[in-house]
Image (tube, rainbow, N blue to C red; front, side, top):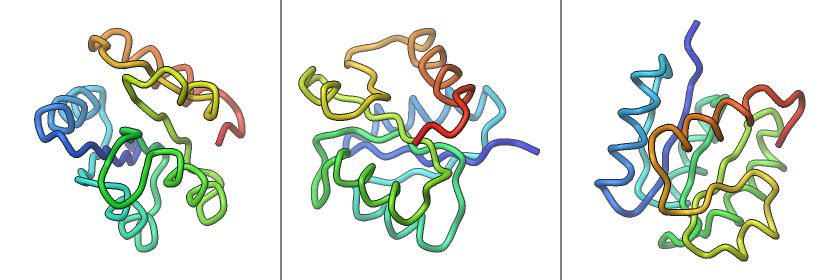
Length: 117
């Protein structure tokens, strides 16, 4: 059974790139354009992984991670941002820019961690 992943970024090119990389890695991918869409999807579907940008309309990536920790504690969340301070606030952080290899390594590391939020 493939992993279910949700990718959220308000920049369509980045969102589509990440979705494509995850699909090629065998994930079933849902895409969202902002944090509120993530919460809406997560209220009706179960995801193994959420990859979200920090700076998005309506909800930041940190706000999404906090809400998912409360409502979907088994979902693992990877936050991406060019703002390196975000990494101080969320353990599973990937600084932008990154390449495909760096992204997949971060995803694999997060998914291998037992009980990681």
